[in-house]
Amino acid sequence: QVQLVESGGGLVQAGGSLRLSCAASGSIFSINAAGWYRQAPGKQRELVASITSGGSTNYADSVKGRFTISRDNAKNTVYLQMNSLKPEDTAVYYCNANLRRLFSDYASNYWGQGTQVTVSS
Image (cartoon, rainbow, N blue to C red):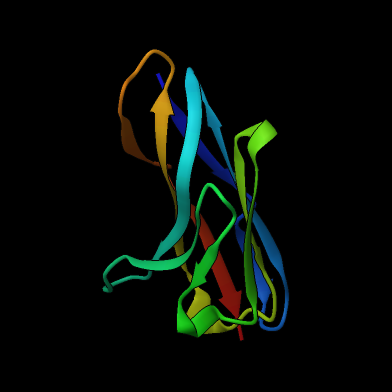
């Protein structure tokens, strides 16, 4: 069984910072691409940032220059450093990973349970 567990969410004032973590556990062979998504009330889930197995990154225009995605392959963990937070960043943040399980010939997508980020003005 594979699990993605997010942590690091919380309440922060505008201009503050938070660091989200997404730890993958279970019988994992390798993690390919991974990403952070968010969903605000009444809105669709949107991609915030993604990172490939080689470390190439991609960001939504709304977070460029403020958020940084990174990964620690040895720990099967993906991070999202969020700086200069704004009230419009308030949402539930979800981790997604495309990974290959041990003894499997193919990769599948997995989602975490989400972590709430609330930015007060």
